[in-house]
Length: 435
Image 1 (cartoon, helix red, strand yellow):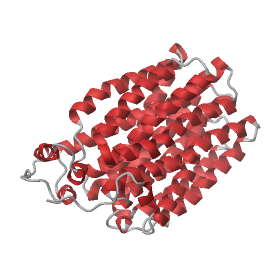
Image 2 (tube, helix red, strand yellow; image 1 turned 135 degrees about the horizontal axis):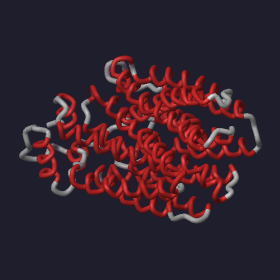
Image 3 (tube, rainbow, N blue to C red; image 1 turned 180 degrees about the vertical axis):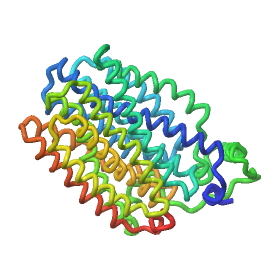
Image 4 (spheres, rainbow, N blue to C red; image 1 turned 120 degrees about the horizontal axis):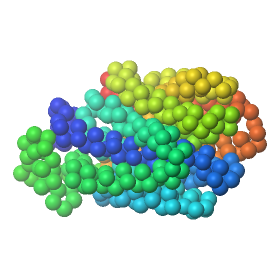
C-alpha cells in the first residue's frame, strides 16, 4: 500500500478534518504569542521609557528564537515525529509566555521572547508538514493556506484582547492569557492528534504497525497485516540534502523570497500599532490598525490557497506581492485619516501576507517526506534573517526621524524581488494542474 496515494485518492474523512483543525488552532496560538508583543509595545514603551531602537531588539529577540527553532529544532521532527515535536513545543511556549508576563526589565523580556520563539519555530514547520501529509494533493494548497491563516487569526484575537484588556489591566494580561490558551491545548493535542501516517510508514518506529492500523481505521480504510517496505530515502534532518545539485537553485530562490518577504512583513506587524500612535492617534486606533492588517491576512491567505488550485501557485504569489508592494508604499503617505489607514492596512494584510504564506505551500511541495520538515524549517529559519532585521531597521529609521513615507517605500521594495524569485522556482510539483 502506498500511503501517499491512499490519501491523495480518497475522500477527506473526519479524522483528517480534525487534524487540520487542531493544527490550525495551534497555529492561532503561535500567531497570538508572536504578535502579542506588537500590541503590548506602546504601553511597555511608556512604562519602561524604552527608546525605539531598544524596542526593536525586543521585537527581534522572538524572531531570533524562531529562526533557531526552525533551523535546529524543527529538523528533529523528521526523526522523532511530527506529533512528539508539536507536544514538546506547546509545553515550552506556554511556560515561556508566563515568564514573559513576569518580566521586569528589557533584558528579561528579550530572553523570554527568544525562548518563546524557539518553541514557535519548532512547532510551525511541524504543523505545516502534518497538514501537508494528511491532505490530498488536490486540496493541499488550500489546507496549508487555512493552517497559515490561523497565524493572523491568533494575532487578530490578540488585538481584540489588547484593545479590550490592556487599557484596563495592563500589557501583562496578554501573555498570561496566551499561556492559559496554550495549557488548554496540551490535552487536546495529546488525546486527539495522531502521528503523521506518511511519517509512520516511512520511518517505521516502535509499534508502527499498530499505530498505522489505528489511524487507517479512523480513516475507514483497510488495515495492514505487515508494514510496507521501507523506501530508500535520504538522511532525515540533513540540511546538506536541501543543497544538492538537483535542489540547490530552488532552495536558494525560496530562501531569498522568504528573507525579503519576512523583512517587510515583520516590520509591518511589529511597528504599525506604534507608528499610528506616534502619529497622534489614540492607543485604541493603533491597536485597531494592527488588527486590520491581521484581518486582511485572515482573508487573503485562504483566498490565495483556493485560487492556486486552478490558477497556479507561482503566478498568484507574484500577483499578490506586486499589489502588496503598492499598498505598503501607499501606507507611508497616509496621515491621520483613520478609515484610509484601516482600509490600506487590511489590503496590506490581504496581499502581502497572502503572498508570503503561499511560499509555505511551495516549500511543502518541493521537498519529499523525509526532508519536508527540514526543508520547511530551514526555509522559515533563513527567512527569519529578514524578520529579525525588519523590526530592528524600522526602529533605527524611526529613531533617526526619517519620514514615514521614506521607510514605508523602502520596506515595500523587497516584496518585488521576493515575488519574482518565487515565480522563477521550477519544479514538477508546482506545474499547473498539480499546484
